[in-house]
Image 1 (tube, rainbow, N blue to C red):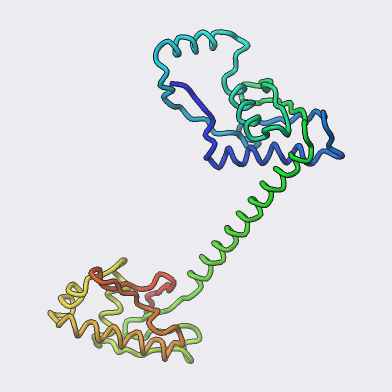
Image 2 (cartoon, one colour; image 1 turned 180 degrees about the vertical axis):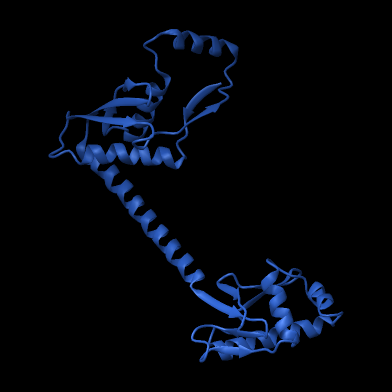
Length: 253
């Protein structure tokens, strides 16, 4: 089995960005400048290698074994140079990196600049992608934060509320069907079939369950000042579940 650089892996993309960043930070970059960049596995961004079937047959395998028997042959170093040259196109030339250490695997990469303007364009492009990635991650974190910030509480006598309780509380009643339905959905994750809920309540009709759930949503929206029809989600053929943006905490008096 041969190896190649996995160009789609995020580690490899980070490696390319790291190399370009080290070139771009050189003051007054000009043609024929030589830039040395050290990479070390586990310390700096490092390309990801993967095995693949080259499909060239046993003759190629034998030839590859012959190459590897040469102490000067370093397959990973050759692949790194090839990968960088493909990405730099005519803006820079990378010679085969020199392996400095084996443990941890360390290479010294020598890059000769052909066109400093094109290198800077690559840097700007990669930098823009990284900034966009940061914005996306920030938005995802904010979205997750928004999802987890709505906390509701339910006690054993059927009070559903959010803080401050004195202002936002829906008193369902301990033995009321709405309390039983809502508690059933809280205690059972994922969509719950309407028929299962009906059986749990003592063979109620499914239409009764649907009506009661609508009332729960309407009353919760009114008493808790939350978005109408938002507390309980429904899906045809699957049933009902608590909207995951709400975290329901079961409490005792």
